[in-house]
Amino acid sequence: MQKINIRNKKASFEYEFIETFVAGIQLFGTEIKSIRAGKANIGDSFCYFSANELYVKEMHISEYKFGSYYNHEEKRERKLLLNRKELDKLDRKTKESGLTIVPLRIFLNEKGFAKMEIALCRGKKHYDKRESLKQRDHKIEIDRMMKR
Image (cartoon, rainbow, N blue to C red; front, side):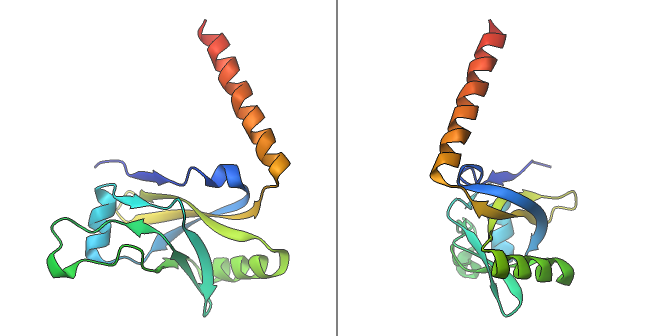
């Protein structure tokens, strides 16, 4: 089976992760086929609560090439599947302390189900972002020195 690992690369630069969760995604048949083909993007997506349920918005899954009139909308809202205890914890934390929920990656588990790794995070300040850039540049420099 082919490894699918669709990442949100901006998330680690923009946010400081506090806690991560793995959630199932409620999908249509053509959506899972597009994900298996690697045709998804979660760069601009975010999670929000509506009626005590967690949804992901702005997640782009391309139309399935062979999907005739059964095809899905590319940017529709999709429900995330978590335990009630986890949902209550996330809801409480986002309301009281100003934290947000951001998708980190989409992957397929051993059974072939699409899962989404989400994180409870706090936005980084400008100086935190500069520090992240310095650490990344420092790591690259050390790797160059080790190669020689």
